[in-house]
Amino acid sequence: MVVAKIDTSKKIKVFLVDDSALVRQVLTACLESHPNIQVIGQASDPLFALEKMQKDWPDVLVLDVEMPRMDGITFLRKIMAERPTPSIICSTLTEDGAAITLDALAAGAVGVFTKAKLGLKESLQQISGELIKQIELAARSHPHAMPRKPALKEAFEAPVEIAAAAARPLLTTTDRVVALGTSTGGTQALEVLLRQLPVDCPGIVIVQHMPEKFTAAFAKRLDSVCKIEVREAKHMDRVRPGLALVAPGGLHMQLKRSGAQYFVEVFDGPPVNRHKPSVDVLFRSVARHAGQNAIGVILTGMGDDGARGLLAMRESGSRTVAQDEASCVVFGMPKEALRLGAAQSSEPLNNLPRVIVQYARSAGIAAEA
Image (cartoon, rainbow, N blue to C red; front, side):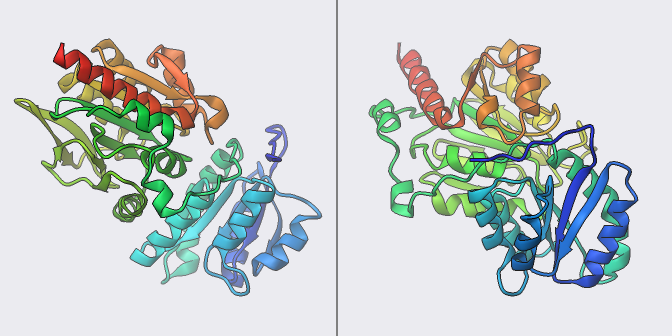
């Protein structure tokens, strides 16, 4: 596997693939105005793009997903299999656009930017600043070749090691919670993790940095490949074994407790650490209301959202874990958690399902003692 290496002392080389000449024209003008970005080429479809890119490979690829001859998802999968390259995909804020975007993220894209169908030129000019930020972040990411996804039947059968650890019933109450926080690269990481968990795992609460309208489709996608139930959280949903609740895009989510039962509050408010939902908001609430009855896991992502919240969880008695650098697309969030001493250990992504199951089993044994 070859991973694109970025020399931060040089301009970020960007290649644009979009079947709209107007989109390519406007984005090229916007990006070229930035001193650290160079548009090295553009193409109207992936086949033309691949031919041009072989001569000068980009640091970051900006890719439309709906194009003639070869669609963007097929092209992205080919790139990620042969030469993983940080890729940002264009999408529209529609239900269909959200589904396609999730396919792209699952295929290995590290970012998404949305474009309006009306007033396209003005829309692109307005969002060019956000695209530039995403390009700068993408250039520092380390996408991996995407592993083969097991068939649906395989997905419903936990690996031998995990199944053995879960041979005895994990929990018969709702007094254990798994809290997960992630950003860039998290859509792939969560799928790898959640689809390996048994149906009797503790209740799970998740913050994935994702725009409004995308989280419902994301949860539905996970639900279709996991043995556990996965859905977008609603205000006052109970946290129970075998259920994962994903915080809605554009809203915060926090854990609360009533007697022996946990539930979530979904609410609006200002961004925290520039994010809404924020991992810190969730983790701090888990520290406050669950403490030693919880495990917190911080996964791949840019920035530091969640690191201080994970520290609060550790200080309250929670088990805390960070994804290791080698398996992260972006090591920012786990790295900051480790720097603060918030995470008790660092684990490869493929080990995390086992860590969660073993935590649940040991907690169940302790409860019986």
